[in-house]
Length: 362
Figure 1 (cartoon, rainbow, N blue to C red):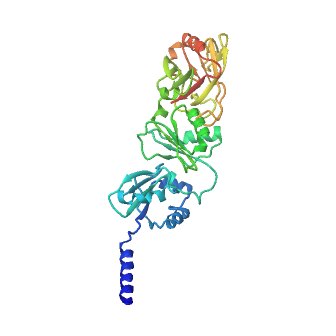
Figure 2: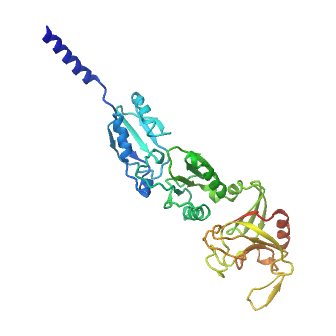
Figure 3: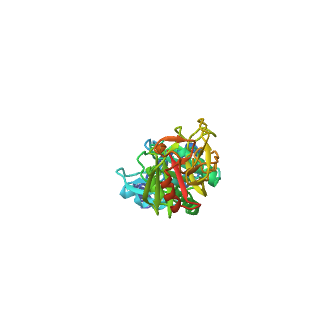
């Protein structure tokens, strides 16, 4: 009898072990391979594997997501019957998006930047600037300005995964919100989105960066945008376009690179002084000698510090002013300044003040 009982118990234990459901296999996919390469983070990190092992979830590394190199958010694909395992994953993959999977017994984690653990990362915080527009070099230019203005050391700028991003977004941790808002205010467009578990800030530049109307919405009161390609000076009031003036710009195309190259510098400037130039003269070096009234009635001097120019170089003597030669308006005719008709600069002088923001762009 005793032998039968022991036999029965043994069989029961075997049946229980056989019927006990196996934990699903967790398969990690890298959806931010560009970022992990820049930051030299192994995927998955040692800490992540230890945590998964402690939960009894066998894990493996699957194929990387070839469509994404800088995905911010982590996505978990899980069969409805395996969802009970998600509670254990919450501390490891915060704010992960949950989607239904078709295969029972497999949980696929498409790891974005906010799903990484940073045990192998240097402590210093940096900013990754991604170009989500068709304008080449935009990420590089913004990174340079952030470094000069705010002391932020950028990761090597890369193109974003999509070239159809409409709005600029700066992703940051909760503790970085005050700084992030300053950066967005400096760009004059975009919004801040908070993500937990981010060490670096990630800025995705959208098409709004190329739209002077959108950018001016972040400036209260009067702001100015000069569009060199259009030979136009646009006036905005509280983000609304109220006036457009024709202008003349530097004789040579492109951003100013050296003194005397007759190019108009590009960047984000302010008016530093409004000077009466009725009696000023200038010799244009054309053999005609000094010309009276060369600058028209007013000379609106601009700050063009190295931290404000696209080139990263400081210039002096750049201004918005009138002219003795109104036939030149709408052409490339100046030594680098923005030239207006005298009646137009008279109007402009009444609308602006010292500190009015002026953006000059190609």
